[in-house]
Length: 208
Ligand code: SF4
Image 1 (cartoon, rainbow, N blue to C red):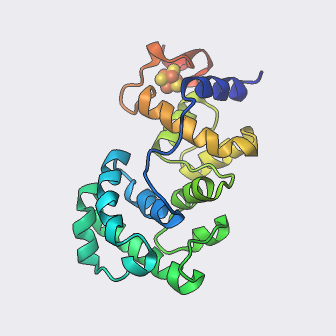
Image 2 (image 1 turned 90 degrees about the vertical axis):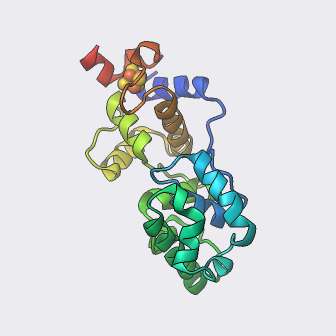
């Protein structure tokens, strides 16, 4: 078995239930939750969206909120000004260009104002079952450390991962790498001594 297959097999064994921890019922709710999740825990996002989505879980309802009103709902997620602006821009775009429905292709998702590449990839993969690898801070760090896709930007790591991972595994690999980053391969102090991937890890080989 090659290195990437060994790593994915082991991650799958460790985290058989790896899936998004964000709570959502529709592609639009997922889109809003993913925008809110930047630099914020999924638990916090879930608390905020539980209240927000009671009244505002469609683009049409969301745009009835002013920027300030929306900020009031989401301020505890951090970066609330930008996030509120992005949610409102994306909602307007969905209403004006896509008849109120979140588009289901990667190309269209990436055209939405306020929706970055990572957010588009997550929504495409999770809400629509598409093949995409969203590179967030965990995927970026763990991929570089393991040496499976090295790069200085999320785009470079995304490209590297797409080359070595079979397309059907892209979405699954994204979740597995996130879970390993959250549970073991922490940003500040990776728990290398208890990590079962250390025999396959470039960072461990260089720092042990
Ligand atoms: S050995 Fe250390 S650096 Fe490598 S994947 Fe495991 S925790 Fe991360």
